[in-house]
Image (cartoon, rainbow, N blue to C red; front, side):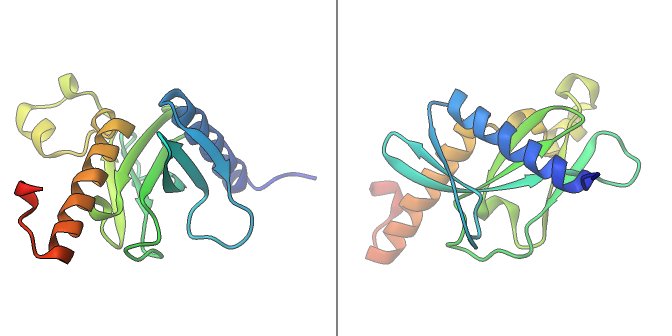
Length: 155
């Protein structure tokens, strides 16, 4: 019996992201049942809900990819993790960064682009776990400050 290529790529994406999270000093748990996230990453006893997406190539441009994020609302997912099968690369973005439709990344290296294009593109190599975790912590501090009426810069 043949398998659906899309399902195989989705499984590859989950395994690749789980392995990358382990390399980033996380413990990883898989969800069972109907959840809006695929993995739970435990980083220093802080749990992160991670939604894994296989990145799709945009048109026939071999270096532009996107993940669809239109089925999610704030508070359901902490991190989106995309996986580009052809590049064997994982990238991470927070819910606040991806928006509610789709998120695009560029797999070209900074040295392969003009300075202007490199400055405006979402370069896959820039979207690391550490960067996403830092942004997530910054967003949490800002939200906590808004809830208490404090200035986030003084917390």
